[in-house]
Image 1 (cartoon, one colour):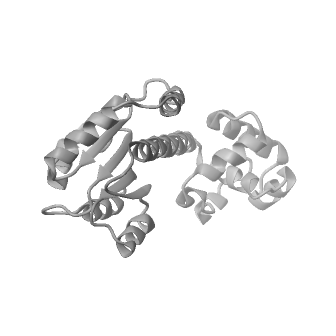
Image 2 (cartoon, rainbow, N blue to C red):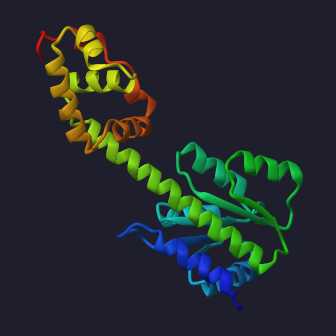
Length: 239
């Protein structure tokens, strides 16, 4: 099957935006129809993507490929667990994947259920090659964006873990927009000590400005942005 120039350009652009060292996207196809799997594999492969095909959701779950970047193309109704069952399983397991449903038996309630659960698209057979390829490219781009965001969160969490209890306390107050003298008064320490802690926080969080520090703070999980516990408040003055 021929791929038009626009699709190739979109694919090449998405590859250029991949961070160095990241695996190439893998398009995972799950459909119990041999002929459908073969046709989809040929189409997706012609676009230059790596493809992995499975006849059932059980086969997929045993293959350990879900951690790869890319997207899923799922049939809705299959023997055993359906595509919707697999989507629900992934959601409950916290595995965020771009899912494209491709089915010959879809209906409006089914498509609404899939989209509410986070599906990237819901297409009905027969589908134009270009429509499916566009959905795949969009799904891979969304997956790449999510992975980059997750990497930023993980990086900032690890940096946060290097802070002392007092530095975390000062960071929390800075994030609230408090001035050095206000923080010093609240914590019972000198303003010079506050400036010292704030400098250590910026160095450990690897930021160059308060604006960057706040942006890094906002990426942290809500549990890490909770106010410090009271024991931190009782640290000796000057710490």
